[in-house]
Image 1 (tube, rainbow, N blue to C red):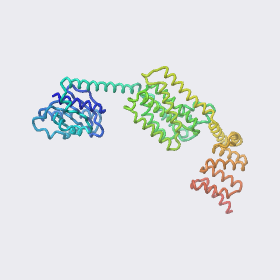
Image 2: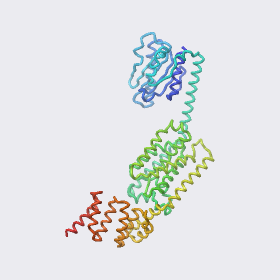
Image 3: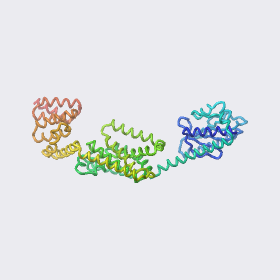
Image 4: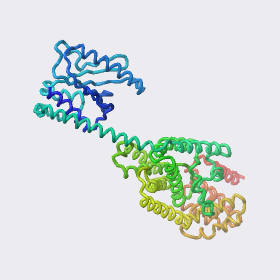
Amino acid sequence: MNVIDSLFWRVVDELRQKGYEMVQSPYPEDEIFFEAPRNSGYDLIRLYRKDVNFRQEIVRDIEEQTYRMNQLREAMRKRSLHLLQLQFTADHPVDDWEDLNGQPQKHQKVTVTPVLLNADTLQHDVNELQKWLNTSLTVDVEEAKRDAAEDVIQLKVNVLQAFDDQEKQRERERAVFQNGRPIFTYLLIAVQVVMFLLLELFGGSTNTATLTAFGAKNNGLILEGEWWRLMTPMFLHIGLTHLLFNTFALWSVGAAVERIYGSWRFLLIYFISGIFGSIASFVFNTAIAAGASGAIFGCLGALLYLAISNRKLFFRTMGTNIIVIILINLGIGFTVSGIDNAGHLGGLVGGFLAALAVRLPKQVQPVKMFLASIVLLLIGGFGLYTGFHSDDQKEAAAVNEAASLFDDKNYSEASKRLEEYVHQKDASAEALHIYALSEAQLGHLDKAIGFLQRSLKKDPDDPNKLYHLSLLYVEKGETAKAEDLIEKGLDQDPKNDQLLKLKQYIENTQTH
């Protein structure tokens, strides 16, 4: 009797050490349920220590387990459930039972596969047990034979204590996700949707003027003092796809962060991350930008902080998934044009530092939190200082202002606004372009041609610049040069309406 008892608890303990998850506390009659590995073909594994003398006892137990599994299946809302039942018995039944052993017994949506194991079976062929479990085992039958009754009792106590410790660990893990309900997550999603509808109502979410009016990140306006544009972009989205992608990300990642950190900590992390994303975009990206991506990446940064503060918990619960999400998003950002990678990375760093400053609810450490807050302010302040004192940013602001002046037909002021930048070797193609157009409108055709040629050297594949330079050559009567540029432009964009019309105009003029 000691042998089969010892073997039962040795197998249970080995499966526990292999990482099998127990899904139910042990019963007094020595019954253990494990969640089956994915590659096993089963949903649950039941290890049951009870002697059986007659076939009918096996049949009754199958019927009982079928009923229990069906209730569990309905509670779990699974289509079907398959239980592998390994029963450890001192002796086999005295009547015929072999036709049941190892044969799936299916009743409606539940299948029970009973397997009887005794000391002789395990002694002669441990592979039998390994076959059913689909895993290697180091069960030592000879050592089990040497166990006295006291040894078996102690083994059982040790195994049950290990299970109890695991259950307490699970409770601590579950408690980490119970610090808050995702109230603010859902509120932020609602705000995003409302703002998107307003954008669509007042001109469209892809309209630059509408986005700017509602608070999109605009470097020129930030340089002019509209600092609030570092916060408002996180509520705006450019197009329906952008909104849907970020809403799903916020619903999944944001909700997890709010449950772990609590609602108020989550809100701090979210806004700090969004602002850090805007600061990084302000420093490294001159284009107009909007979206909650920086704040969402900040939530990912907060989860990475969890990986450092509680590495085991992180990788047991969500670690691999979060790392995959970060890598996928960064991969998309670096392979798809138009995505603000600076904002993403800025948000990731901001979220990590914010989590370091606010800490998990039960990790309040005032000195470390204060130091982390100082680091957060220093890095954010350094980013703002860099942005406001960057020559590239100043030029970008001048270009935006000159473009507005040009649209208002104030060509003289537009030209003056760019005068100090266009004579520098590293002047941007856009600055040179707008300056050249302004000079052309003022009648300085040769000067305009020279600056447009410089602009084209920096951006040789822009059909718009090719068209404007061709137009200036036509104005000067140098149609051959214009035709060469038009052909080059049409090679790049055969359906360009402006170039086609200009080509037709030249041909009509030459015919007449």
